[in-house]
Image 1 (spheres, rainbow, N blue to C red):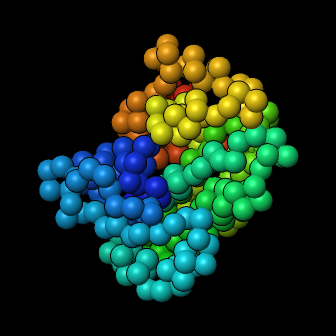
Image 2: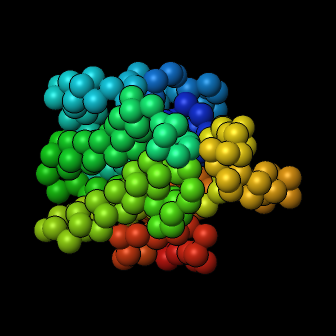
Length: 249
């Protein structure tokens, strides 16, 4: 049985990922602060388990991971997918404008949570089961942008984590830090609402929205999951979904 864990599953790309997986008949464990905003279609509700957790609350996440809930949910799986999707772009702006608490929250959501979940998942896997992990990264982790020092740094951390973990003796584990491209989600709305003095490149994102160049979450979700289930997955620890022209099933 294939099972999948999706963080930030209640909206945006996370909601699209959960919906696509449920349509494929996959059992999904969604982890987010709030429940899914749209009920699953075609009986998918029976395959969806939701856990209410704030990814910024490292202590609460550690407490949940220290219990039996994850191991019990995984017990009958032979393949497990983990999509570390939850993330935040805040704080945006130069260092002089950044609230240290916002910085800590970003590091907790963007870095601590995915690394904690990845380690806990591998330790809780049933013997012999295969495990595939995707960190949803960003081009911002591979290029520096003014105003995005925290976002760039945290996404770069995911790239290096996947690269280093892929060099370990992992058995049935494959891990990739994947940039999905620019997607039409609430995060993009936050970017476009940022004062230009805090994010000088905002006009570039305004133009992407106006020209209809933002990718639809459902299309990105389908491509991401197809890639995750393909023979090509894990060949490179750092990848860009837009550069994957085709994948081998």
